[in-house]
Length: 253
Image: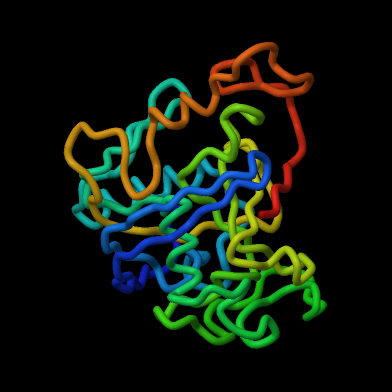
């Protein structure tokens, strides 16, 4: 199932600082230029964000759209695992660092403008996703980076605590203003169906063929964070262990 035409803008490279509330740590990520869709992917023939969408749905959409456009698919799916081919020129989910850098668009405040002007939130008292690009864009020409629907990104949420949960960014139409900030993150199971979740796509290769790191993401770092010294705290499921059913987790930064 493909959505409507994807319009991309060029996002300049730069440096973004990502913070982790659980560990109290931060890391600086240097990003190369990349392309990002101006809006979340919309339903076919319409202007509302595609939703609800699982992380796996988003990955499959990217590959399908890449093949339809004569591009090299960014993902290999096998036995429930997803491998990112960082050199591929096809559509893909942005990394968490790319998403936050693009959202901020050169700003350092919690939002890139007054929320009432840039985002659909609980303050608007709407009962579902709204047509995209009806509120103001940020300085990079990106609409709905905050509010409307949460957006899946490529990265794991926390490989030490939540196993294979993936990260969600941006906030949704029913979220209070404090939850619609550039730094707020949530995590959920990649197969979870959540009413207020959609996705936005990036495009283009950002690494060498065979590399397992790009744009702030690293497979080695994922494994390292999952390796806990001593006993595993109760309720934690490091990456590689069986995952019980859980609700979405919030991790505001």
